[in-house]
Length: 180
Image 1 (spheres, one colour):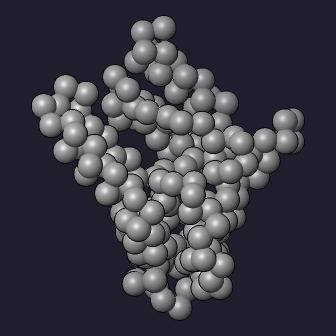
Image 2 (image 1 turned 90 degrees about the horizontal axis):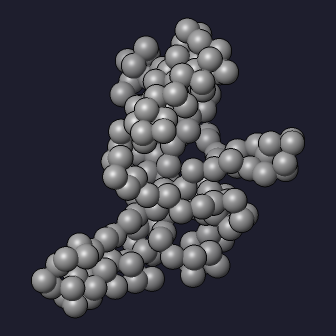
Image 3 (image 1 turned 90 degrees about the vertical axis):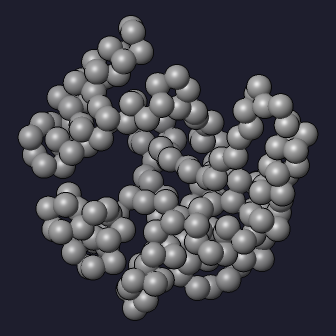
């Protein structure tokens, strides 16, 4: 775990060359550029499950929302239009902050560049078009749903449980959370 080697997250562990890989979002690219400019890295799609041929994935883009009961919906909508405009999303993309929220940027010239950041962003962004990414929202559970999953991952990576044991326990805790 990153904390075991004096790091606060996977990106820090990768930048300090204490691990061979990490599972992070596009935000790691700007961090690597600034903190470890000589690090030779790349991005890869997650492997396909042999049973289905489908690939797992997690895609995080910037999400902008408006309160349904806002007294200023028109103004809020104008702000949302500006924040998600192709120009604003181009800025987000080129700074390594996140993947753009618009599919319209898939053929963006930025993705044709040959530097590590552009290549890594292109690989990840193309993964969103493989047909296996589904929308997700935290809904009424907020971030509480992540705790059993994070604990299961930690348990498996630290050798305290097998993957099957950790998944069973996480599923039980998630069922309790949602009242099943």
